[in-house]
Amino acid sequence: MLSRRDVDEDVAMTEPKSERSADIFLPGGVGQGGGLMLKGERRKKRKKRKRAKKLVEQHPVRILVDYDLPVGVDRLSWDTDEVRRMIGEIA
Image 1 (spheres, one colour):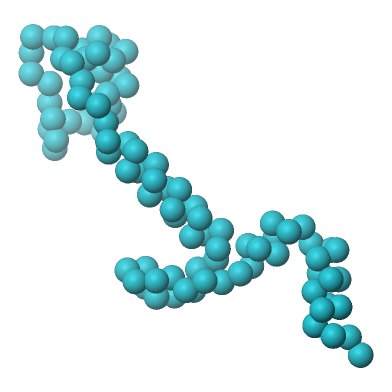
Image 2 (cartoon, rainbow, N blue to C red):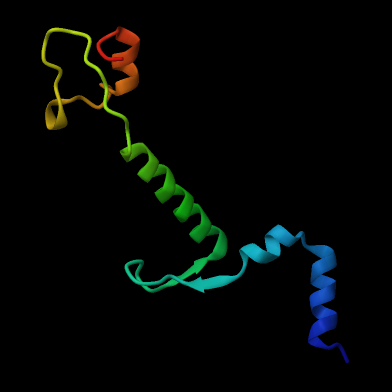
């Protein structure tokens, strides 16, 4: 008769470790619906939050033009800081 250890060893030899660890379910936690979440999904969400936080912590820019630039709701979706730098409006 096979024991649980024998079965786990067989799985370990047939599946890469990354696939086995991705199948581990963890509780979602407060604010996430309380459902079950894969370990890999939680890691991706954490990285995404970290990237978003980093984007929010932008450095102040120096305006190089003598006209007012639209801000907030008046700013179009394509009107990013990168575009403004390429055009020469900000530094």
